[in-house]
Image (tube, rainbow, N blue to C red; front, side, top):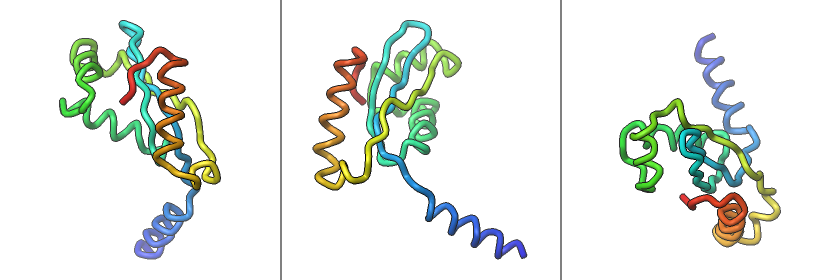
Length: 111
């Protein structure tokens, strides 16, 4: 029975709807913000936090703020979900344009 439950869980994971979009990481201590894009918003926070905890995030300003203030001083926010239809015309082009828009709008550094 355990094998059947595992197979069902894997099937459910594969069938879930994935939402691409823009996210924001904010330092509560100094109000700095960074925005990034991801093909799956439901998993990106875990990836970003993992790299920050291990000191390997590629955005040096974000990594420095994380080391100075600690994990408790950071918040993750979903900014915009982007329709799959919109992404069909060109994922990279759409994401680059939306990221630039939100970086200006939120006065944030791009990731």
